Amino acid sequence: MFTSIYCYLLVLAVVDTIVLFVSAFKTWIRLISGVEWLHGSAVTCRGLMFMLLVALHLSAWLIVIVSADRF
Image 1 (cartoon, rainbow, N blue to C red):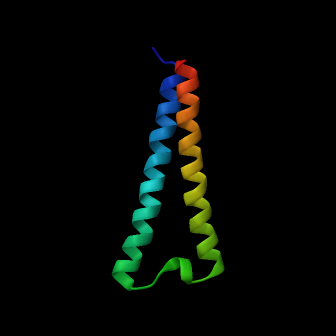
Image 2: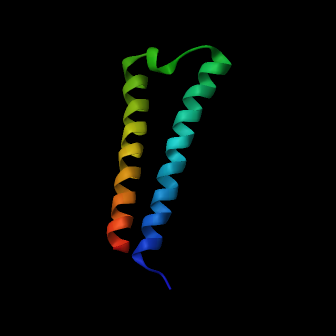
């Protein structure tokens, strides 16, 4: 049976994976090339931080939504 909680948990899994990939990608690039992308240009810094912060906030709010739905 498909309920709304499964949809929320699926989106939460995808968003958490995005958070892990963005964080790991940033660190991996720094270790391989020795270049910190956050110091490279304003566009890369803003783009990476925007993606990371949106995913982090969305993850937290999805947990709130899941808790409210379960209540």
